[in-house]
Length: 415
Ligand SMILES: Cc1cc2nc3c(=O)[nH]c(=O)nc-3n(C[C@H](O)[C@H](O)[C@H](O)COP(=O)(O)OP(=O)(O)OC[C@H]3O[C@@H](n4cnc5c(N)ncnc54)[C@H](O)[C@@H]3O)c2cc1C
Image (cartoon, rainbow, N blue to C red):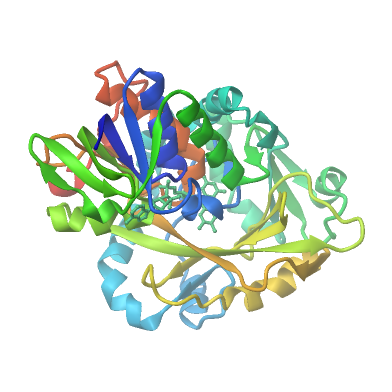
C-alpha cells in the first residue's frame, strides 16, 4: 500500500502543478490519473498564458448576437437543444455575472492570480526544462471592423491603468508582425506581455517529470474509487490502495464525478471546445496565437501544425462530438490565413470546466476533513495552473498565501 501525505487526483496542468508545488515543499505526494499527465482538457487548448486577461468571456448582450447563436449561425458558439433546460440555471447566473459592475468585480478578484500567471509558469518551466516551449511573442487580437474594435475601448483603458502592455495597430502594422495574414481586418491589438506555448501536452508532461524527479509518485487509478479509510482517504490504483490524510480534487470537468457522491454539489458547467491542426500552405507561418474576434476562433502555431480552436459549445460533457462550428468558421479562417490540409482525421473535443462567475474553486472542500478543491478554471486553466499550484500548496502547508484565497472559496456557493 502506498502511503502519502497528499493524493492529488487529476494530472492535468492544474493537478500536476499542485503536485509539483507540494513535493517541492517536502511533502510525500501521489498524483493519480487514469490517463497520462496532460492528456485531458490540458491537451487541447490554444496554448495562451493569458497574464493580460482583464474581463472574462461574457453572455451575449445584443439581441442580434443571441439570435445568431439561437439560429445556429454563430461561428463562436453552438448548443445542443436538449441540453438547454439542464444548463439554463447556469446560463442565467452567467448572464448576471456578465453585467458591467460584476465584470469589474471579477476583474479585481481574479487579477492577483493573473498577475502571477507567467512568473509561476516561468519558475516551473525553468526547473522542468520546459522553457523551450514558451514563446514570448505576445497574442494578436484582430478586428475586422471598426465596431468590434471600438468595443475594446474600455478594456484597453483598464489595461493602461493596470500597466498591462498592449499595442493597438492598424491592419498594415499588424501584418508586419504576421506577414502571412491576409488583409481582411482593419484593426489589431498586440498584447505584448502574453506568453504562449508550442505544445501544451509537452509542458504538462515536463512538469510531471520534474514532480517524479523530486520524489513524487505517479499512479494510475480511477478517482471515483476515493473513499474514507479512517483516519485517511483512500484511492484504489493499479499499484494497490493509496492512502493520505489530504486529497486534492483537480479533475477539471470530471470533478463532479467524485464530488457529487460525497454530497459536494457545486454549480459547474462545461463549455465544450474543439481543435484541429492544419498544415500551412506554401511558406505561410504564424509567430504567435491569433484571435479573429469577429468570428470567435483562434489560430495558434503548435508543433503539430496550425491549431484552430473553437469557442463554446453548450452540450453534455459526454455527448458525442458535433463539430459543426468548423463548417461555419473555416471560410473565415481560410480567408485570413492559408490553411492547408487537416493533420488529423477528426477534430479533438475538450470540455472547459466553468463556474458562472468565471472564478475557479481553490481551497478546502466544505464539510469534508482533508479534502481540497482546485478546479473550474474555465478558459484559463493553462494560464492559472502553476499559480493555483502555488496558492493551494501554500494554504495546505500553512504558509502565508501569495494572495487572498477567499474569492476562490467554495463557500461562495454554499453560504
Ligand atoms: C478549445 C480550448 C481552448 C483553450 N485555450 C486555453 C488557453 O489558450 N489558455 C488557457 O489558459 N486555457 C485554455 N483552455 C482551458 C484549459 O485547457 C483548461 O482550463 C485546463 O486544461 C483545465 O485543466 P485541469 O487540469 O483542471 O483539467 P484537465 O486537463 O482536464 O485534467 C483533469 C484530469 O483528470 C483526469 N481524470 C478525469 N476523471 C478521472 C477519473 N475518474 N480517474 C482518474 N483521473 C481522471 C483526466 O484524465 C485529466 O488528466 C482552453 C480549453 C479548450 C477546450
